[in-house]
Length: 313
Image 1 (cartoon, rainbow, N blue to C red):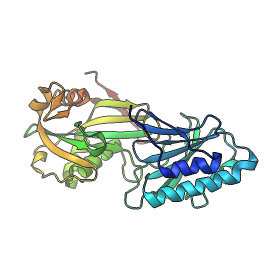
Image 2 (tube, rainbow, N blue to C red; image 1 turned 180 degrees about the horizontal axis):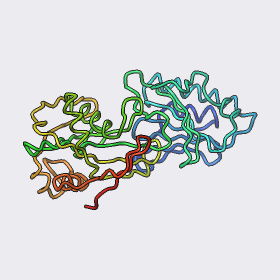
Image 3 (cartoon, rainbow, N blue to C red; image 1 turned 90 degrees about the vertical axis):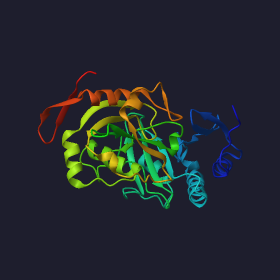
Image 4 (tube, rainbow, N blue to C red; image 1 turned 45 degrees about the horizontal axis):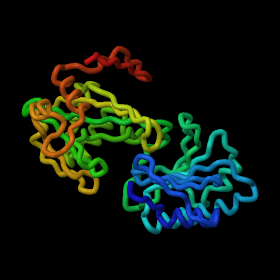
């Protein structure tokens, strides 16, 4: 494996705290920086997040830890090395310790800027700050786990589906999708259609959206135990929309390398690759379910609770 290095801001952080550079390793796609004797470790994830995990700190060392944290925050903001900074405390945590370590400029409870997440799955209290003013904040608000949805946009006239190649997953076809945002989405169907329009660069008119949501089906579900913020679940939702592939695609270049309407038959006949990109089995399986009319059946709707059961494929 090629040598991996810590950004200089993290080197400086460890030198300030311990007088030496950290040991650096790569775990999956994450860069991990640590020292055997340290009460602090740092990880940079593949999404642009810098995570500082805090173990037990003596009262005497709290001021120097906060000074080092301030320096790390300012360094990351100045260089755009990372999009977000996360400071994570093991639960249960002492609020006085948390307050003594966090940078003074941290904004908690400000939409799109910073927040506090109590993650009972990983037993951590996570406090984060968005750093990059040139990018829209992508962290789902208040999440203790991450719910998301992907859209299988099916043009039932032309028999085509929208597939995209995401910059972060280059070399793979993906269904457009993303995280549920309670400030914008009423349901996961809203999430899927919003993300499909953003990633495909298309605008679907309101009557078509309402009809698509009414006719949509749950045709698959993916689980991500090592998701960026916390374990995630992503639903694959099919939307039968006649004539939709007539809309021109104009995907955002910073996020999507390629977006195309692709024929059902070409997807179903694929042996795992299509036009030079990997085509995951979840796409073929979801399309097969959509073609055959299989999916979720709503069995309870009490306004405050909606229950759907998936018909086995």
